[in-house]
Length: 293
Image 1 (cartoon, helix red, strand yellow):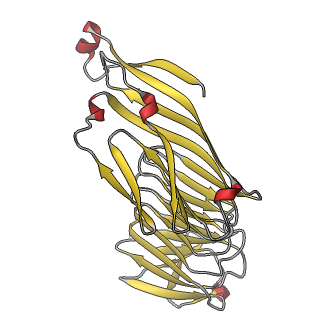
Image 2 (cartoon, rainbow, N blue to C red):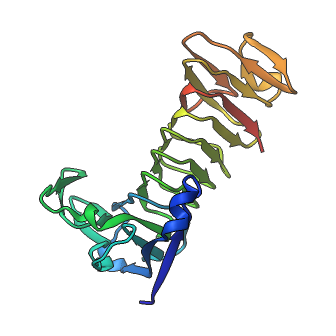
Image 3 (cartoon, helix red, strand yellow):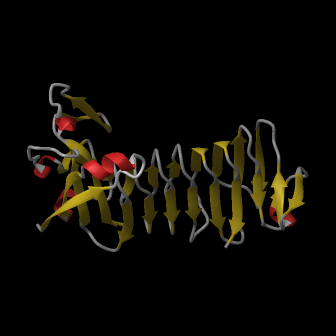
């Protein structure tokens, strides 16, 4: 594992008189991250979970039998910290049980256990690690056997990008976008609070799909012949599509900017094609788009 120690200089631009008197330094430690989960720990019924806290996640399904995780970890100390901190206290760990495999970020004072099909976190408030550390992030690339059902999440400072999975996916974020590409088979769910949800299907969905954002847009791209029951729910948004009029059953659309626009007060279900799986699009402040690839 390679370690790089870099001093980070923070300019006090907002208060130039203070900058003239003193410089503020923080220590930043960057390390390579690697984890390999062998095929012996997986089978076709395994549900793979990856729970990040801060940083980007890029998950790719591939024709292999192992889970391969690579990327970087960055830990930044508090400005003008006079004592050192230990970056090795921030690392990836894993637990398995009940057919589920969990990979997650450990930090000081955090205990983790499996509770049914989820992780339960216990934080020791006596461990005041934040007095020394300003922040940490893991920016990772994850290769997953494409047959695994996967549940992927991060919270801050990054996007969740998932592609190439064939048995369903759940992708979640809080402060950042969710991007799902080339997914087929299995249930599909993508949600965030502050960001967009973007989905591109290389095969039209055959099982239920659910996308949700609070502050952002939802953009779905599907192939010609897309068939589904699309339910649109939004507080103050609209639904747009560039599929032709013969592709859906509704007399509630008007043309705008080369697309058909639907405005609903509460929620409405529109049949595309012959119908099929349920596609739920839920928004609060934003619009939804269904586009033809």
